[in-house]
Image (cartoon, rainbow, N blue to C red):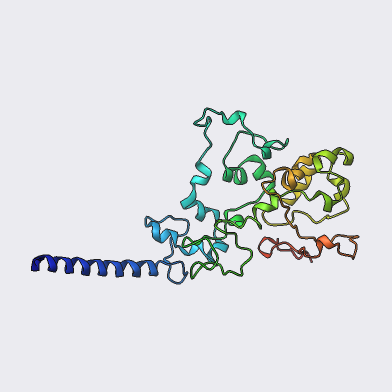
Length: 285
């Protein structure tokens, strides 16, 4: 038989656990992903409280749309500070290793990390205008699957990528998809047929699909100039560094002399770039 003191001690422990559990649940609810409940951090300043930082409004709509790189890098600066190892644990030197997407003439410099290649390398600075929010549109830490929590994307959201912190179909695929050679009318993949066209994309594109790269995350004039000098600049983002077996359905902007008939492969293509990437037009009158 248990002594009265033991029973009293057990009841006391249960009571403490109940109160603590209730307080913890209340705390989590107050710090949940709802922007109304989240506690704002100073602009660009990390918080010592990891849970509060995780559920900060900057990670959710609509705050993520106006987040600056400085605000993101205040907590995630390791994405630019980290460097690749000179030698792997197995003894392979980074200077002697190249992947399939590093074989073009435009790939220069030492091996570098994923984020640095997209943000701070010479080619990135010359041709790109990428920011953190170009790819990252927030992140719900509760779950990365549709309809799995009160704040997750609904099951009907087809633009959502399961368990990814970016939507690869609308970001990565833009520059890392396959070239659709049959649609472009090429007799064979570009590496095999490029000599037939003088190794120049401008052989055809000087008059076709002439509205190109005019989005906020690219430097259109610099890309056009570089592509004129070296076709690998064009092919690099249009098949030469493909990570996926499918191609990206680029918007089919109208051009002067464009045929009024829309081919079957283009009937579902958008005619404008995504609204968040449009460059505001300037009224010159």
